[in-house]
Length: 58
Image 1 (cartoon, rainbow, N blue to C red):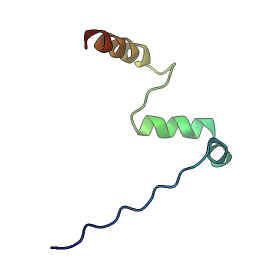
Image 2 (cartoon, rainbow, N blue to C red; image 1 turned 30 degrees about the vertical axis):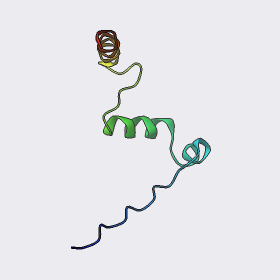
Image 3 (cartoon, rainbow, N blue to C red; image 1 turned 45 degrees about the vertical axis):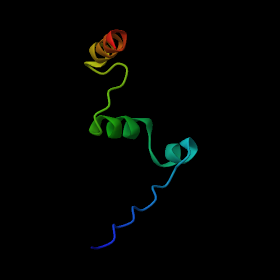
Image 4 (tube, rainbow, N blue to C red; image 1 turned 180 degrees about the horizontal axis):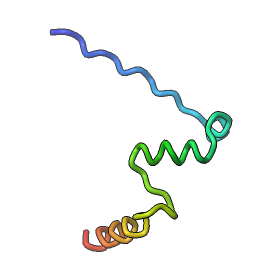
């Protein structure tokens, strides 16, 4: 049997480092590509309401 490949370490960036190479618009676009919604996005209020209802029902 072969050895399992090692997973490379993921670098950690500080907020200042991220701000230096990504604008707020870039960060928001990346978030959208990853499936995140932000306040003001269509569907955000409904998602937040559903999350609160789910927490109450758990």
